[in-house]
Image (cartoon, rainbow, N blue to C red; front, side, top):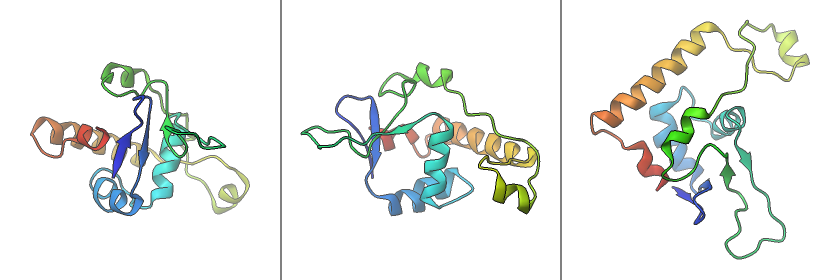
Length: 132
């Protein structure tokens, strides 16, 4: 479903449907893969597009300098892009390319993050296993 590139500097979701129905369903408020991609962008991940595709190419992989296999402490330095915290009107959504996030949405995200950490501590789904 997900694998690291041999370099350990990027990862790829091989089966988006399975990923959406298992990982996204459990840890996110959405199960649409494009929403997950948007979150990756907000966290500073870049999709790698290499042409021509060489052997061991990273084409289609996502990378972030603060996200590397086995280097968990780097994740602490990751920061999500600032997002407007005021509700948007339909007119604003049509005219502005920024995401509007209410304070209740922030609380939901924090809650999901806490659930993920608790599940990992309780021996539930090992989220890191999806990336190894």
